[in-house]
Image (tube, rainbow, N blue to C red; front, side, top):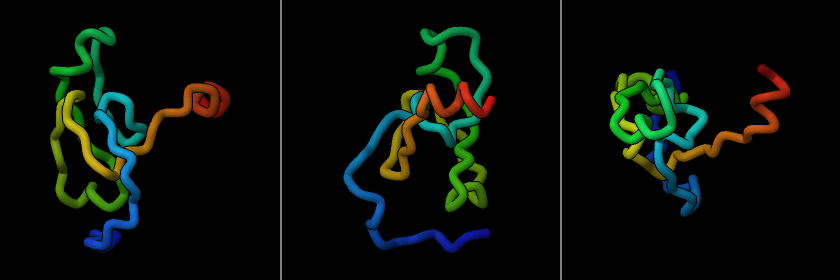
Length: 73
């Protein structure tokens, strides 16, 4: 388990969970993403077992890179 960093070294980039690579949720369609509840799997936050909707967001946001995900998956 990593120590939660209280230092704001994550920049100002914020975004919605539905577009973050750390959001682990199953949903039927893009229109259902906002209300879908999933787990935040960010390494610094998994200890807290955070359940968040797709419309939630934070400053630990890491955008999904579609080309990278398609190549590795």
